[in-house]
Image 1 (tube, rainbow, N blue to C red):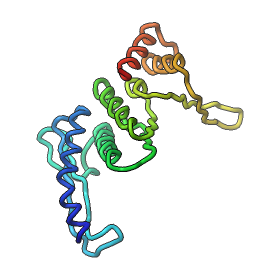
Image 2: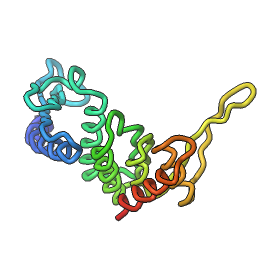
Image 3: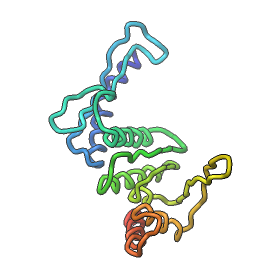
Image 4: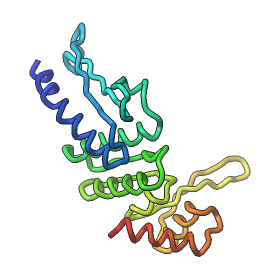
Length: 194
């Protein structure tokens, strides 16, 4: 019962905090609500069944997360939740595997900024295909596959500054980046770290 009371007291505050982060991530009309209902029979997690209700757009109704939201909207919701949990928890490392799915442009830049902010207090490992998000990193690694005669092998290598620029330029324009793409990559990195 004490856990239920604490959950009910925290649910609205946490929902409001999620909504505020979502505004920064390009979802100004998103709403969340944590629904707490009693279980018929208590289990190891207490007396409550907890559901995250989500309305990603203006005029949409709050619904169960399984029923609503695109991949990009759900990715941003998860990033918002993880960023808030990270503020309150002593997590040494956070791994974001393509948390930026379904986003681009300004929202990708905001996502990179939020990940960079989280990295001030935690080690953050981000797997991304977006140059805006990659540019926000402090240390870069390239993950690639080598195809041997009988199998494929995944490899990883650390990138120095010039190779980081080159790989971000490739993300922008393909395997043969132009000078414009290289300049754009440099500007993205400079803008993300200022």
